[in-house]
Amino acid sequence: AIPERRILLLAIALAAVVAISTGRPRALAMAAHAKERSDTYALPPARMLLAVSIGYRQALADLIWAHVLVTQGLRAQERRPFDHLPLYFDAINTLDPKFREPYKYADTLMTFQANDPDKEGSVRAARKILERGLLELPSDSELWLNYGEFLAYVGPGSLTDPKEQDAWREDGAAALIRAGELGSRNETIMWRSVAAVGLLGRKEAERAALIHFLERVYVMTEDIE
Image 1 (cartoon, rainbow, N blue to C red):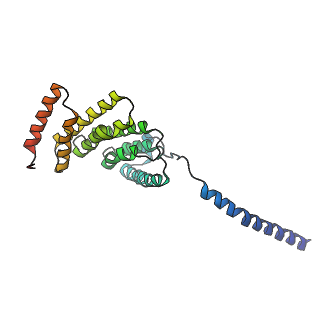
Image 2 (cartoon, rainbow, N blue to C red; image 1 turned 90 degrees about the vertical axis):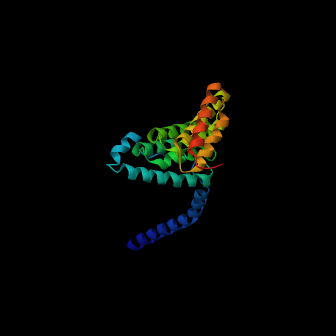
Image 3 (tube, helix red, strand yellow; image 1 turned 180 degrees about the vertical axis):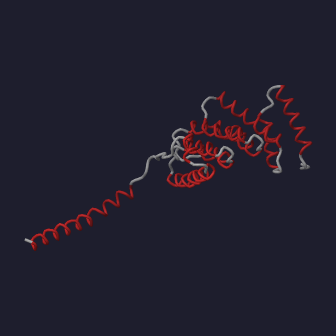
């Protein structure tokens, strides 16, 4: 009986080996052709992250930001959008409201998604993130510049209402002028701020304010041109 049992076990083992050797190439081929279609957001709500971080809020914000940058690169290679990106920004901004880099690059990451099915929604979400950054860092001229250029030149292209497009451009011009008023060692910020004048000036009150702005820039700048 014992030899028969050994023979039976050996036969079962051989059958398993044959089945694995036959099925494994097919399984690998199927896995190679399979592609992910959506992402899963595994983090808890942003307000709960404050407790989950157990005091290491900035460190956790850095970790999530690194994940966002790496994943964005992978999604670009895969030619598909980064799902749940606004939730990641909300988590980072909640953990570390003064963390500047996410605000600086939010418009680029949000609006230049490959095959984005909701371009307008992404643009609106990006504006909210940028405005949150300005509330936290109101004296940062570069953030005002990014915000202004996004509203004036990038965002309106994804909107459908012409009146809303014009309103965004006007808000963008005002933000660019604000960047120039704050001043910066970077002369290009001043030049790009002055360029916003062409987006406004339709009303008499606006023209007077713009002239006053240009006079202040002329006094402030050390650039002869």
